Length: 451
Image 1: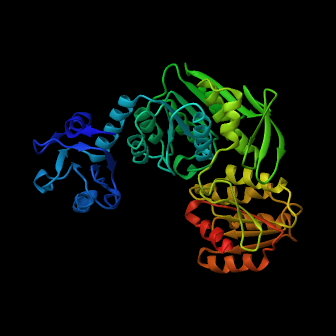
Image 2: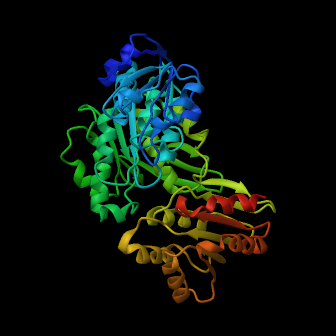
Image 3: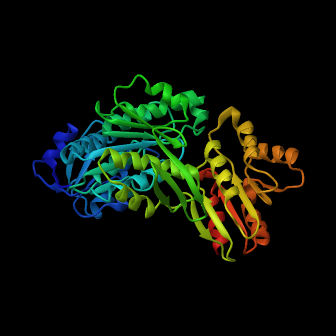
């Protein structure tokens, strides 16, 4: 981006304190990341970003937004007064989006949105200049940040949209005005805040709030909650699924490092295990087809996708055991899918699982954790490690159904003991899967097994 302070003032409906005009070549809200020529956006949260403006100036900021008392505004830098720095940040992103005018693809869902984003970007990059949400910058701060870091000349912008409460995705969709929107799956994530799967479906459908009238919505064919809610829309609706939906896939082969599947008699592969990842690939395929990509281009994009770290990632333990790390986030639907997939994958040794609490499940937490017993048996799994308080429901369910299965439970103060116990048991021929909410810190366990 390359904006003068006059343009920024107009875009955010602010006013400048000084007459001198400067040019801004980047935007940051973290003063530590400021480079020469950047606009500093002091956001108010746990800390007030206005308190760090001196550091931003020291690092080279040429301008700053400002919503505190004008009398406290810094000297030696262009200052643009606004009522609310976050709203101004979002308004500037909207302005830049209109200036560049890429096609916008919005992706949400209870699980798989980051992997789907990565697959979609990989597919579309076969033909277009693309940019995608970096990491998990998918909220009311991260989304405008992504837009403002989009390179000039971007043709397709892939935005991940996350939420904790109702109304949040509406704000993101209205800001981004997507041409294509996709919902990966409706699970139980954030059910504590929303109350039911029906309310979760309503929240995810907010992605259509800003969807272009001639746009495309992609939803899973096996989710009646979404099918019902999509009926009243005027936009094109496309469904996907395994052996179901308008875009239907058949699984041909599942292995640790790849899944092979067919669509319309054409073969495809992804460097990831699991039919749930094939469903993510179908969304990317539908988006690719919508924008005119051919079979070969879609094949290349899916076959060589690079996924964000800690999403269904195969690693090696120090002793040679295979680690399936999927520790960024978890809800019952996602955990069940990972366990089902892992149970089918070949292994020379034993299958072990490390499962941690799934957070934000509310009053149904105990029962939802216990329900994971439906995805575990004493034939496919030889040892289970449970970590946290909420997952005690699964401990009880496993003891009732599989009394001879080796199940170990550790509270949150005993993570190091759990790591030591796993290391003592894990053999070179074994395979081990780790799944839990990000807040449980299973990444520490993954890293410890590699050392």
